[in-house]
Image (cartoon, rainbow, N blue to C red):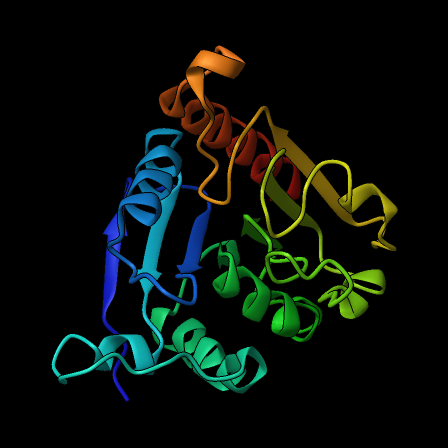
Length: 212
């Protein structure tokens, strides 16, 4: 199946970033678009794509539910192949998209296809189900990884995540008062969504420069 991509950022960027969407919103959702624009402004070439079930929602009546995350691994690998990045590539995504990328990252990193993994709001557990962890593979992850997480993300808060067994190759960037879309409450935190997006772009650009 052909993959449709949305591109942002300079075509001659030193590093490309491939992003998949979360379980319930498409690649052109407000949060995905905001993140892609922030990365593009920081000088990265960003490509977004959709898994088949989400793409089907655009043409089919009804709301096709997302499949189990691990069943999407082949689709993500196909997107990497079709993208055909010529230079250094980072894979990742929003929530479930980042989780899927994390499950194939070591294979692609070992083969030299990617240099890193970027997760935006990693779903460490389902909301209100803190014991149903999705972290087992993260303990042995070898791929250099950056997880950008809001401190009050209901999928994994700043109080919860430090208790998890995570690989030394994983770096965490905590955004003050951010939710699952990384958005803060300005009246409480003093930060705006634009502030956090700027921090996101600058941090990922600096991190990717170290990798490449």
